[in-house]
Image 1 (cartoon, helix red, strand yellow):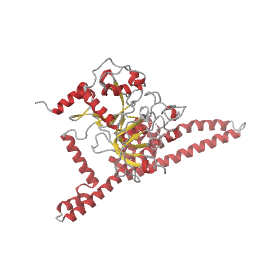
Image 2 (cartoon, rainbow, N blue to C red; image 1 turned 30 degrees about the vertical axis):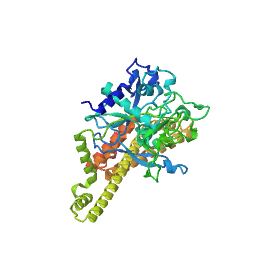
Image 3 (tube, rainbow, N blue to C red; image 1 turned 135 degrees about the horizontal axis):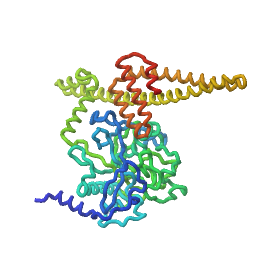
Image 4 (spheres, one colour; image 1 turned 60 degrees about the horizontal axis):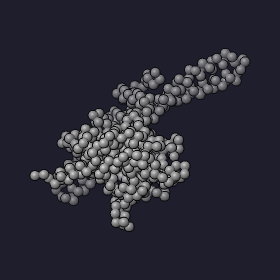
Length: 509
């Protein structure tokens, strides 16, 4: 007997057009770049994705590790909509090295790509087909992601990475995934991440289609004509607004409000004024239009996809999640930790009211501990970052000192003919030497203090996150300096003997 569900799935997949000749690359990836991930589509089409790393600590350090990020933007006029708030993020694609990431569409889904999946005949690739597909409802976008995933599972399953026993899938991005990627993710510094938009050194209109004759001139534009953000994403701000997965909620001072409303459009569009464009921009869109009695679709609103994977992909994964939760709950105190003792007391309580009261206290202490640990992790990362910058400064001062001294000595030999020149070089030499001495003392102090404040495991985890960020930002030298600092701190913690000369030799060699 054939199950009705299988019949429906077969009919749905058969309704997608068969493959045709491959499209020209310019149709689906007009700005090819290193790191692009290409997925095939029906009708010979393709879709380009970019990998978004979410470094959380040591590779494979725990399935419940995630990355805390600051989303939103503080502004008195929009605080109830966009006020800064903490959120947590972890990519659903886990590599063999334990590194987490997710894939996000490099461009907004184009008209040709949409037609290839959703219409009964293959489109003839065209310039108009490279426009973002707008006038789609949230339900249309969800249906597109479902049908595209089903086509890949049927026609090209090897292109969907597997997590445990389960294949990855496509869907709309969550708000956190969308905004993290829009801001530049780990490819930008913390300060750039929290800025109004990702770095735009050539001006907004070089990166985003916005309202006005000097930019979009009131017209939707083809995908990929402008420069990308630091993650290689095009049109993430401007051009078409983009649907995201979850419903709209207001902000109630540093957290989202409990009422879920309509759906969410992110990123602004080709009619948004340049001064209003920002990474935090979010609008509530009613999912249904009461005037037409149909799902809402707007000429400014499209979407892009993400690829991720389910969480509970195998029994071994479920066991690891359970163990990770218990370890976080116990914290560093082990079985003698007060929280663990409270849990035991609650288990032994016979009075239901007492049991609930003790559980509430234990849960509150556990939440406070997790928040404290996360704050400590951020502080450790910032300390290592500052030390790496200090090492860079020390090296620059050290290399500058010898040439300045040589010039001073030459000027001293010619002092009789030009005493002012000799005095100027001596002043510069003294200032450089003083700056170097102060930097040495400051570095020594931060090294010793760091050894007192953080254990080896905390530093190793913070270093792993920071190294991944430096690599994403193409700051290889800073990654080297960060590793050197942590190595020196670890060595000092194991044997607390100050070796200023030895530390300094390592820093400047």
